[in-house]
Image 1 (cartoon, helix red, strand yellow):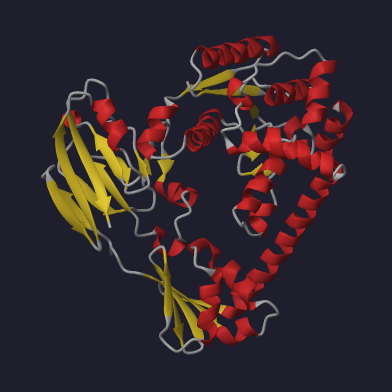
Image 2 (cartoon, helix red, strand yellow):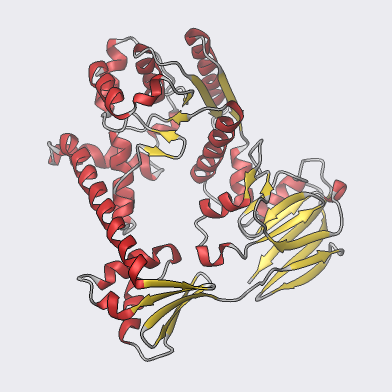
Length: 442
């Protein structure tokens, strides 16, 4: 495998020989093998390890293993420790999604603070196949079926063409030690079920799949690129932006060979049902459909994409921490609550549209306003700060309503990107006796 890996790096990732890089390493086989492969290629690197504190002493032993590995490799190691379960409860998301958010936020922060050109992860061919099958089950379009990208911003994945079998073989022949994650054997998680129960059957039924799957992904990726080029051409000639609306020329759309596909590509970020959108082409004037506070209307010879007006440059000072505030078509509810066990209360009452803050050092009045260019906040679970614009993009907020998102501030601190992400400021601790619970209700 080493020779094939060296050839792959020379051809696809030549910048790694001179770049400042770090490897995201769990201590498991895949990432540990990646580190050894790069060392054989005489590529310098540092290590990043995330301790999610989900497996007690096992998690701590993983961290110690990585720290020892860094000593053996004579490189720097960055350790990030997270209270993942608490974060998942606060965000009302799964443990897996919480770990993913925390991990990639940490990568971004570490890359900025240490001037790393790229962070390497150890995703390989079976990870690609698992992602393909998951997205296939979700009814994903072409973008979802093209798999994991070899490059995505500062993240690079040089092991994607290689199989788990090749990694196993390299580890065995080179007497490489690694840490086994006990949770990987559980099939209660979707990826593990695919890994242990489904993919072995696929390989048995389709013996050439392992060799040909990468080719299939390459074909799909090339097809996606062609579609992107063609849709960009249509956007240039068949759409028009007027103030805060986008107009799509119906005649030009109908003249294409696949109007439904063009319409899907033009509207996919807004989550419209493509069949409903297509029906508007021959609908009566004024007919419309709605999605995510965005409206698509038949207006004579065009489809008009426009925002549903909720808030226009909103600005409101909040002095009373026991109050209800109207916010366009929504309501912000603030409650001051006395508790005996603050963490238990937060765990039992958390949801995505709610935050809990400790009022002890809160600066009043609170200010609820439309976010501005350059606004930054320190998200819960991150050491550094992040641009609000980047957080809205990461959250896949449709572009027509992104600019009207609201932030809640205390003094100079943004404490909530409303309905999306809470900050680390004024967080609840076990000693908190008074909680301010803030909820956005539509």
